[in-house]
Length: 282
Image 1 (tube, rainbow, N blue to C red):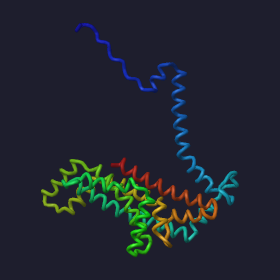
Image 2: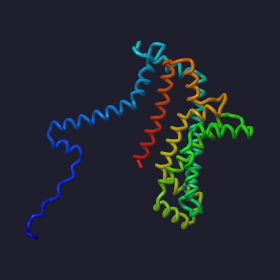
Image 3: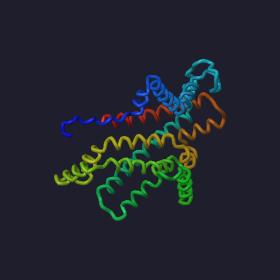
Image 4: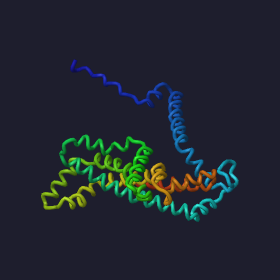
């Protein structure tokens, strides 16, 4: 038996190879099905965005076919609108500040629960992540009732508080998942060398978690930038960009709203691409 050649096991074929084994026509059918499925999936996801961007360059007064020429006048009108630019600045301010606060609080909470053994730490983690499972409408209504009962005036500050509530769990989850034993060993070594706890956090923990921190921050900016319900219910006069777009839509469709939507989409894409670039570089 030892002298006989053993028959090598048959390789496990991928679905692609299985179809090719049936013949060239079957292989072509499999390839065509895969590409057709991918084309349908991408069309379903991106076709509304493509239509939005294309008709933002419509020269006519309505963003509907047929195209009546290509023009940038709606972008010029949007950029010259003071109320719209003020709402854009408000959105940028709220997104930046609330994301920074969410990141700081989420990082500190993740570091504390990952490095310290506390009674009921599993329940504490669950409580921190719980707002991710709650509707933004419920959170907005709860905060609205709280602010009215305490006499807090609705403003961009209250909107920022609401965005911290929905973004802090996200930042906590990302930071907590990125913390490993090698970072714990580096922090212990820094403490043995005499570094204080703030210096350990600033010079050791944060740099080692830089990709996760950047991802959490950019995702928080994206969610805050596009958020409507909290911004609508928790402010009165200093509105954010989604609320301003909603007020524009009440007067009917216009290529100007398409232009604003295209600009919002551009900011979201830049944030997501920046997050991916930081992750790949790390």
